Length: 168
Ligand SMILES: [Cu+2]
Image 1 (spheres, rainbow, N blue to C red):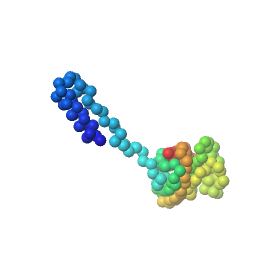
Image 2: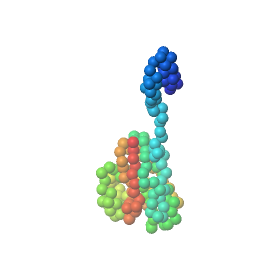
Image 3: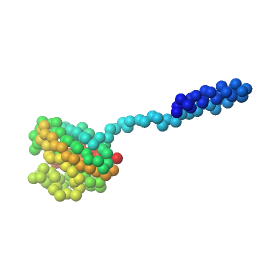
Image 4: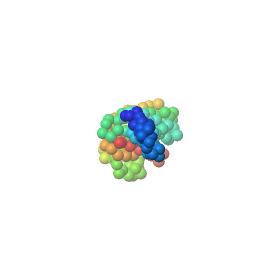
């Protein structure tokens, strides 16, 4: 297709000038080829297999997770730290849209016996176990298109340990 256009572009002026046509007509023969053939890969990768790490610095290594909406996501949380679970435990709690994160975190703090998971809370879409050093846990979930906040519900962590799952 591209070749054909090029050929026309070259042949036409030759034909025109051969017929004694106005040489200025060559200016109009620079046919623009549509850039439809260039498909750029998006910078952020969308994957439904996610590995996220938490550490003793109270940080996740990911704050933005892009997934495909409506398709099952397999997410693994790893605690790469060495501090005791009682002092620096981590989990991953995915929250329903519109959740008041601060209010949820406060509620979670009061639930030490259930590892800071307010059992039955409608704000929780899915969560991992609370992990001690070197531990990991894998969960699966499926979400419709949209943005969802996630936090670590260990007391005092959500301020630093939070991010977004973006399903598209
Ligand atoms: Cu944490």
